[in-house]
Image (cartoon, rainbow, N blue to C red):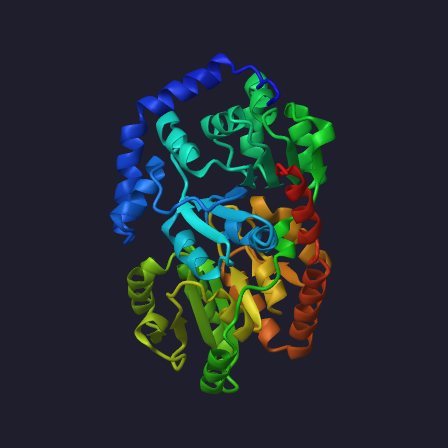
Amino acid sequence: MPAPLPRWTALLRLYGFGADLLAGRAWARVDARLGAQGVAEARRRERRGEPTRARPPGRLVWFHAASVGESLSVLPLVRLVAREAAVLVTTGTATSAEVLARRLPPGAMHQFAPLDSSGAVGRFLDHWRPDLAVVVESEIWPQTLRMTAARGVPLVLMNARLSERTLTRWARAPRSARAVLGLFDRIVTQTEATREALVALGADPARTVVGGNMKASAGAPPGNPAEQMRLAAVLGNAPVWAAVSTHPGEEEAALAAHALLRARHPDARLILVPRHPERGDEVAALTDRQGMGWTRRSAGGRPTEPVYLADTLGETGLWFRLAPLAFLGGSFVPVGGHNPWEAAHCGAALLMGPLRETVKGDVAALETAGAARTVRDAEELGAVASELLAKPMELAAMREAGLALASAQVGRSEAFARDLLELLPA
């Protein structure tokens, strides 16, 4: 017999009414976006809770993550759980679906997550009938959580990370925060500060523990040794650095920094990796306007010009291994930063801008270890990158420090997997 659900507040009931009322408009928006990104119509309808796969027999664990970074952070956990039960991973973006199609293990499958409306969630739950639901980081959708818990499904919030803005917003509605957090059977936070904040909002302290950042323990992204050797041969002795997961505004900064760097290193190469490869044409046009020669990965080009536009998906591990020094995007614009551990696991020294609220603890650990440095703007990015490329011993020390710290984080997934499997029905 499931435990009684926390009492739903008027604010949460109003949210549910509004979400159901606007479900048609929300569906039209996500349908158009996914369609523009090349997702087939049948798969787009998964967001309405309409499945495109049969439910496998036996126990099923449902993981839900927002997008690529969050889903990859729990991929080691998915691999371990998939040995004991079927696994369904849901996300909301076309990019994450494409990446997971290549990287999910046998026994695991991907679907797009249902919108947070009672109709979509009901259809989803009727079909998939999960035995355990694991929500990753900050994907807290009240209707989805309540309807799942109402069916007696244990709920886990894994790798919990909520921004200060989100915590402040929840603090303005303490009874609603307590009701939502009370749905979780277990909460595993990234930091002690997050644990304390969630407990202050009403999370059960006995069920809320610190587990560290699972992105740190996820290990290195896959590489391509043969392609790495081929490209390294093309690059020869040219100094190489990368700007990875860049957003609009950051390509300009990277190109400006590269122009400054080439004054000292005329044969230097920049591997420019936009966060969203579909922006390749836009970034190519921008590089043209900067008057810098470039070649393009998606067109079969080789890194023979000052800029190599790596507008492909799923090759981040290749670029972090090929370039000894990397600037990580999402940190010069108000995105909050991206996962710095992939670079460290691949042995790349790291440069980041000042805007990295969502990963500030991770970056602080890497900076303390001597594996990362903060740069304030394009001019400082160019100066620091130029300095490090001219000092191979200092650059090598940064790379070794990052690799050592990242390697020390691996291994926690096994304990997390055991804890999750204990929540499954016999």
